[in-house]
Length: 427
Ligand SMILES: Nc1nc2c(c(=O)[nH]1)N(C=O)[C@@H](CNc1ccc(C(=O)N[C@@H](CCC(=O)O)C(=O)O)cc1)CN2
Ligand SMILES: Nc1nc2c(ncn2[C@@H]2O[C@H](COP(=O)(O)OP(=O)(O)OP(=O)(O)O)[C@@H](O)[C@H]2O)c(=O)[nH]1
Ligand SMILES: [Mg+2]
Image 1 (spheres, rainbow, N blue to C red):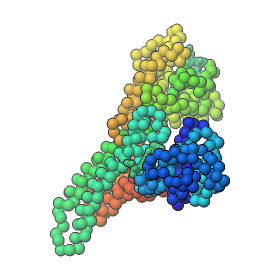
Image 2: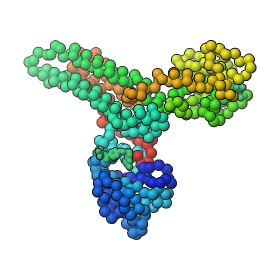
Image 3: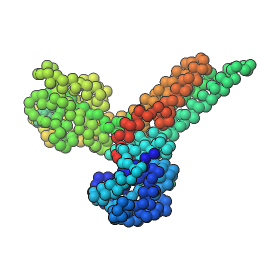
Image 4: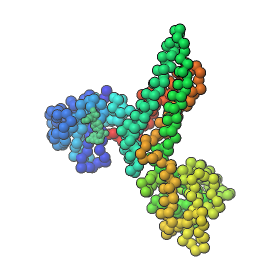
């Protein structure tokens, strides 16, 4: 296996740059550059010399973690360098010349941790979310998964499933003998499978972690010229969308992520919904606006006509600064010009969001884990319907495969590349 290296700390220049080296050649590298191998797991200051010509590269703090008791599960060395660009470049150039060493790919350190069983797939996903976390709620949810909450839940489900499977297998083993079949077995299996399916479904039905991570989708919609783009700009505090008194100004949908009140939002401005589109481009814009409305978690409706059917709609009364705009009981009056009513709008949105987000004190599943959990639950529901023990055993195996896929024990090669591609290099 190659030994990999990468800067694991942030953008250069910086006060300190942590260069991590993981794999079978990591400690030979330290010996050759630092003259000796410091005591494992203790920081030591060493002058680093380029073995090629003996020149001084840097004076660094070195940490060595012998495998398997390291973050990656293999020998891991950390060089805490001075964080200048040329320092890091010089050390990387010296490493690049050594055989067996190569730069790490994004997420490759974590991938090795997974490969060596230091973490499971759900923990790796949690780590990925932790690196991307911007809000406190995102951080708490991610650290919970990274620390094994999903893994432990699935292990609990797996244990219960194994108990059921063991009883089926035992009965199947005995069925060719003269024993009388256990009459209580089928009802016991059915109730066990039902109880397990119910517990899984309860977790899978919780609000998805994606809403927490990617933001609650808030779509601004209404007729042309209603003031949608002005409101978007006001809400995010910058001019993301073009505003003009001309009807049909916005044609593409404009997405603006923003964090407010500790919640990540994705605000989406759309083309005005004209009864008769003026041209082909406008018609495309309107089709996109309708598609956006359909996938909105919250719809902000700026029209004078009643809003379209939507589970979470706030009916707004824009341009409240203009004389002659009448307040209406069922509409939230606001002005993108003065900012009046904006705080009330954010509060109303936060109240709606409360039920859409996973509770902060509970584990939440991502889309992949949720789909697999649902697969497992439906296999258990199917097992409940079966009369034949062989068919029940087959359904239980199918549920087990879904559990194994959640934790990465089976059938996940295809998703690993996608997962680790969104990690930083050096993680
Ligand atoms: N400098 C530095 N900081 C870092 C990391 C790192 O790799 N380097 N981490 C990178 O993600 C995180 C810490 N993660 C780590 C996970 C496991 C072990 C480790 O050596 N575990 C051993 C020993 C545990 C012990 O001493 O009790 C083990 O679990 O057996 C080290 C760091 C965050 N901060
Ligand atoms: N006085 C006042 N004018 C506003 C307010 N909001 C928007 N306007 C004006 O209304 C006009 C249309 O605003 P836009 O935000 O472009 O409207 P829109 O709904 O995005 O329009 P389309 O993109 O064409 O569908 C512009 O001239 C804005 O300056 C407001 O709160 N008060
Ligand atoms: Mg607009």
